[in-house]
Image (tube, rainbow, N blue to C red):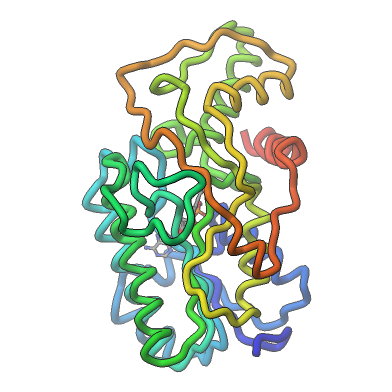
Length: 309
Ligand SMILES: NC(=O)c1ccc[n+]([C@@H]2O[C@H](COP(=O)([O-])OP(=O)(O)OC[C@H]3O[C@@H](n4cnc5c(N)ncnc54)[C@H](OP(=O)(O)O)[C@@H]3O)[C@@H](O)[C@H]2O)c1
């Protein structure tokens, strides 16, 4: 059982997701949260991760550390995306198991599902077809993580869950055009266009791919909810089950910023998967639903963005 005295390791606490999870657990009154910066413990380092876990006696582990990026960095750094993620997750999951940690949350992403999955995508679509090429290496690392957790649950009766969120956004996101996801990139492009008084922005691909977006605090809420809950299912989709095209999101941000400009499509850049809306029936059946609207989430995210840029 997890309670407020439980010793919980949050790996990746400086990132978009980890910082939101950390905030959630502090708010809920957890007193014994452990975090460690990457410069002190690089989670790829097998020996150091082993010593770190031995020195603690964690009741639960939340793995929000990963090499993460948008379509461009996934395509450019294929080997790093597969190798670094395998190293991080193998070290953290295996040492959790070795040190008797009973509860663990592993985070994957909706890109683990085949490119042409039936929509909305249910958990049973896993390994039913070919992956989208632009994030295949990242997806394969994540699938290995899910299967590692599943194998440990089946063999040793543990509570190691894999939550699969849709695209996320929120405070503390990455706005670097080279490495960011589509939504923070759109916010930055439209913001820049407004302050420079320019009347156009460029969008990669044809702008038609549809994406589902979840405010990151909703994911943190799901992590909090599912860490405490014992379920027979190991893989659970986390989203709101609604999607929009990239162009529609651009228009929503333009309206929010009261800055309307032309969209120039860059067809030299890839589109990625045409659609990947999650079927969230299982999460709902288990008692969890998202709460934060896109309007509210965008407002909170933009206020954070202008503080930092
Ligand atoms: N962002 C999304 O849209 C999205 C969607 C679905 C799922 N997810 C999942 O959520 C998780 C977190 O993603 P995120 O968006 O929060 O990524 P992020 O903002 O890039 O944060 C990644 C975190 O991992 C840490 N990290 C990376 N490599 C490390 C290493 N070798 N050793 C120690 N720490 C390391 C980073 O530390 P530094 O700050 O020191 O770099 C940072 O704290 C990932 O598993 C991802 O698959 C994200």
